[in-house]
Length: 305
Ligand SMILES: [Zn+2]
Image (cartoon, rainbow, N blue to C red; front, side, top):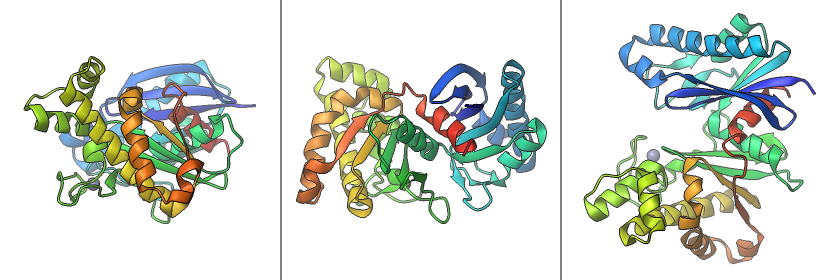
């Protein structure tokens, strides 16, 4: 099989992996703070810089692996399904209808595909799954909560690229204000920043989710409570999703999934409670075992289709 590159665009860096089959055979990380670029430059200039930084990183990887045949990019934003452009990115205001794939393809002389980062991770999880499955729901718990849906072996982006905006399912009417403009969205409770907010409202103390996880593992009750709240919110939203899409296989990924042991019991209890009874024993929820590689592998394989 030919080599492909998969890119995971993070908050402050690009992770670039060279993928052979289902394996990442080389991985490099490049500093790339796109949100600072967007904050400090006019839209056009910011876009040119984002393109240049990405092209430069990819060029370095292509020098090591000149036989790479295609490049896939998982981008945190809404991707226009018809044109493949970045229609909008909540963390990168000013970026509108940016043709990242076209711009990179012209510079790097290879086919380039851009897909929403959570959908790329969903596709990676689907390809990596031990069972022979056709459908999968993916929820990625990070700074926010992303979602991806695979239907009949294909990524499902929706007609506008907004399918599976799971983090914005409202689980707490009139709850915490969300970046999307609504209140009580699931990601305000189930993301890393949501856990920090819960802990702060319980204790008045500001800690990051990793430190709260440590405290919870040592039995601190407020820290445990913050993760239980995350688990319950996630289960509420997932029950809604499963009632709509009727998919059996669910994979939980993202940085916060490392804290799954703190969430699992409250999560399963709430999911069982909220699901239609006949579905209760038919849902297979697992935590990603890809070691953060699903996004890279999924993006790479999407470019090779
Ligand atoms: Zn929201």
